[in-house]
Length: 262
Image (cartoon, rainbow, N blue to C red; front, side, top):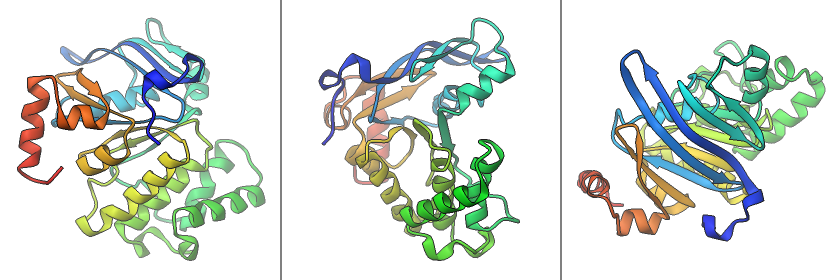
C-alpha cells in the first residue's frame, strides 16, 4: 500500500535535506533543495538530462560534497557549512548504499565474492558470516545458481542484480539508485525493476533516479520532478502524471509520452 507523507508520523522521517546546494566552479547545479523522506517510502526522481538528479543523489551520501546545506539520515546529520572530518564522512556513508548506472563489479571476483567484499573489508565481518549472507542475498535477487560465475559470464541484468545484492549486503538504512536500468538492453530491464519493486514492497527506504516512467508510476510513494537544479513539482504518481500543476512538468511528460506510454 502506498503511503503519503500525511499518513506518516513525524518520528518516522529517515532522510531530511535542508537548503542543499552544489556548485562546480561557477556552475550551480543544485539550488537549495529541501526534502523529507519518511521511513519505508520509495521516492522516484524524474526530469530532463542536466537537471541535477544524479548530483542530488550523489550528495545524499557525499560521493559529491555539497557546497552548502545539511543532510540527515536516521538522526545523523552532515552539515556542509564547514569541512567534515574523513571519519565522520565514512560513518555517515554507512547508512546508505548506492546502485549505479554501470554495475562496477570487480571483474576478477565471482558474483559471490563481489557481494562478500564490502561486509568483509568495510565492516570487518567474518568470512563465513559474510558468505552465508551473500548466498541469501543472491537467492533474494534470483541468482543463487550464478554465485560462482564471474561478471563477464553474466548478462547486464544479472550483473545489476548482483550490484543490488552487493549494496544490500552492507545492511543500509537507505538505498539510492542512479538510473539502474539505463545501461541495460530493453529485454533485461524488467528483471532489475522487479527486484526494486520487491524491495519497495518490503519497506526499504529508497530514492530512485530513473527514466522508467512506468516504474515511477507503479512503485513510487512520491514522485519528484527536477529541472534546473530545483524540485519543480512533487506529489503522488497520480498527481504528477495525471494532473501536473507546473508547465515545466507538463512539457517534460508530453515529450516522454511521445516515446513511451505512461
